[in-house]
Amino acid sequence: MADYNGIEALLASTDNLVQLVNNTGHDDDTLTFEGVDWFKYNGVAAKSIYVSGNSWFGFGTNTSQLYVCQRDCKLWNFWREEGTLFNYYKFLRLKWDGYSAYSSTGDDVRLTYEVYLFSTGDIFLNVLRMPTNANYLGTSQLVCTGGTKALIVTSGQALQETFTHTNEDGSDFTAAAGLIDIKAPYDRKYLVSDKSGKYYTVDAGALKEVTAEETYISVSGITLQTALWVKPSYNLVLRDTGNARAYVFPLQVAALPDYTYRDR
Image (tube, rainbow, N blue to C red; front, side, top):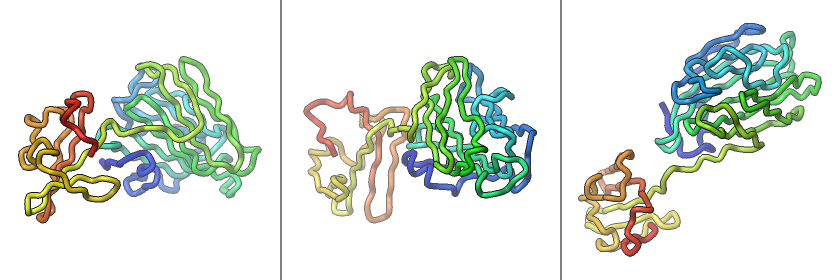
């Protein structure tokens, strides 16, 4: 599984998508794909994902829950990807590609979109290609126990919609247009030691020398035991190129003594 340093990097990459349906038409049938056990929708773990040729998704249940231009459509291609953001948040990426008219393969009814599930409990919809024919936009909405969240779609215009969970069971969401906001769960701090024993940090994109006292701990001596501010759930990463070694670790900022830490 691939890891991405942010949502923008994830959206920009297609390298790790696995194609599960390849130029094969699916009209009124529903396909079942592997889901995940860490995401809940309406209290049900989404261990299976149900995908209709008529452009709807079911998360753990074979019923229409997310509609995207839903009508008498036809699915032709489908991809899946599972991975992480910031080596922390899990995601499941699902990509639907086809036409919003079962009997046409015209550009005016082409429909391509991605559905993302995140271990935060949230859903992100990324419509890459919307039909330009306004007569074939169908129904777009999220249906959950907490109510139906209708989407505003416009012919020929891409759409991004974020569904933020309001409870742990995933039985209600708030819908908002725009890119989902997932920030790193920690700040990455860098210490670099060269062969002469000098210490550097990264400041404004450039190396900046710091004294051994400013590091407050020998670079070669950093461990999960001696660096008390390192969260135990994260791994200390050593990058050794042969010319220099860099330690990358997430900091638990609240645990830092006020008088010993400088932002670096």
